[in-house]
Length: 135
Image (cartoon, rainbow, N blue to C red; front, side, top):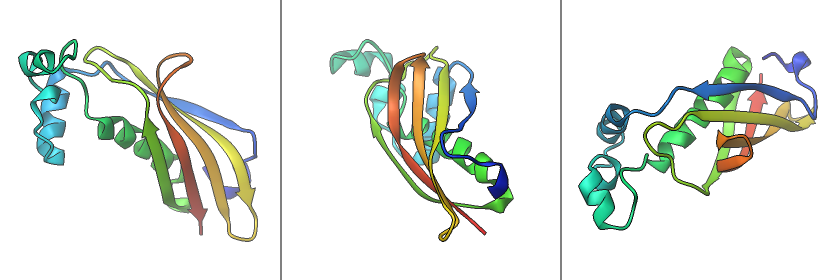
């Protein structure tokens, strides 16, 4: 989205990711180098008290990075992305990434965003902030 189109208070069209599949978790383990079996093996996950495998927290952060990166596109770059994880993502979960513009600095040409990933409306699993720097 170009600089002129962004306004403080604006809620950006959400990015909805299809249901998480176990094969996606296996692929992400290989891509990230995080082979902790709680992300790929139900038996191991249950042994440590989980209901089954859980997604890597960084997977939901990756979805958020995709969303903010697509927002700024070729008009600039993501200069900051900071999140905290508040809930688990499980196979079958559909995730919705949400962005809200909180500040637009005309001098620095930056846009600040509140970011979140929800499993269901109001059930935030990942939240944080991002800053986009425009050329």
